[in-house]
Length: 237
Image 1 (spheres, one colour):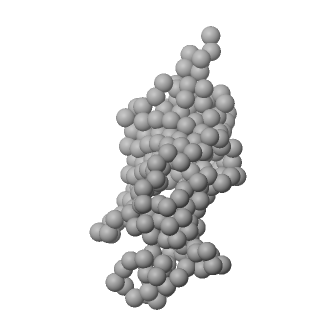
Image 2 (tube, one colour):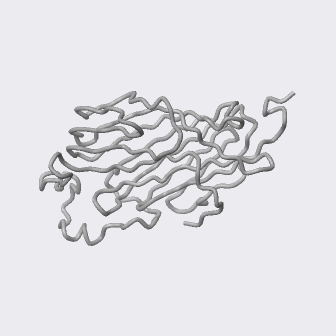
Image 3 (cartoon, one colour):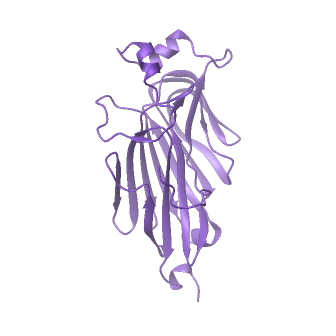
């Protein structure tokens, strides 16, 4: 992936799912079978595992994969203080005994679990959500606020999303990330995105909301550069 900017701080919507069991975090044979859930020989799957490089999947497989939906709402005050609201839902979760949804060491507040289905327990611990006994096709939704925008000078701010990754042991597996960025009423307009639209990376924009639909393996970061259009839009008199 080509990084267009040096500044990589900002909104990091991390989808790092770490899984294990109560014993040394080592998965049992039954959990491995449920995880891969495939007719392909296990040794072949391990040999084909992605080790972190970003690979867009122009033709996603027929089997539905883990999906993460993210709704980022930029507020009229976001340009000045950097805070945005985030709603995030995870569907088609993998069946596993223990897992955690981990967020990076960036400024966030009000992390809450708003919905859970097919999960015995889900609770906030620091900057993570700890999951226990996740059933096949479970669902988890969380909300929070993150100090997301970083100034780039000349009325520009950067929104960085990621790293998104679906990780198990030392491998990375297919993931579908849906990202809706609502910037209506802020006076901001997107002027550049990275990565650019391509097979496996669809980008739409209606002048108020930008949508990103990415199918990939490995680690994905997205960047959106916004330009403030007028002083009036910033709330100045």
